[in-house]
Length: 229
Image 1 (cartoon, rainbow, N blue to C red):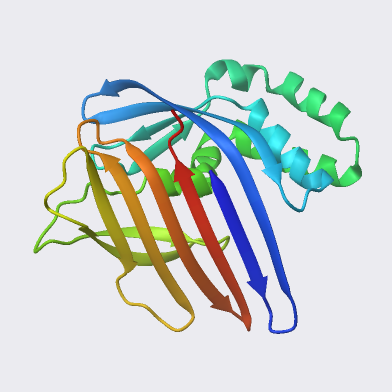
Image 2 (image 1 turned 90 degrees about the vertical axis):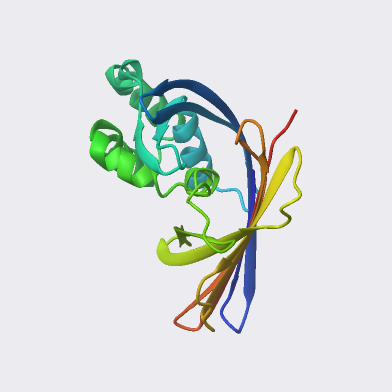
């Protein structure tokens, strides 16, 4: 996954690029729900910092997480294996040894709170950029050639209504879904493109671009997810 973000306040422009790999495995079906396992690795951030390294190492320390979705792709719950929860004291001690900075301690204390409270953990993980993008409700029913879903964008998780359509009804091995914001506004916009395997229903490639303007600052994000063979 590659995430490029630009912030423009009219006086200066700042940008940053974050890349990492995600290993995704379908585990099982429980009634009408699907259980997936996710590993995140190989983090690289353009504007690297101690806190960015700490965040990346903290995420790696929790591998894997399990994601439960309904048949349309909506995320129902995100949980950690009980073994990870039982071992969290050792995980935190290791992270504290690696990052003895006082600011790191504040981060790790908040990290511990989120990990040990599974409801809080699930709620926050639903806001994860990869998860909320990859597991978007792409499979909502179509009417008059369109379907509709809700998506959240930006660090503020602003809710938007998205409409999507199939690029061509004459698809074969791949279905291409094109997305736009249902009601574009001057201070926000959104476009998306998903390539989905027509047999398995798995997402093969995603391109998302959006901008948000708040208090005179324009934030632009471009996100790509590609299936690596």
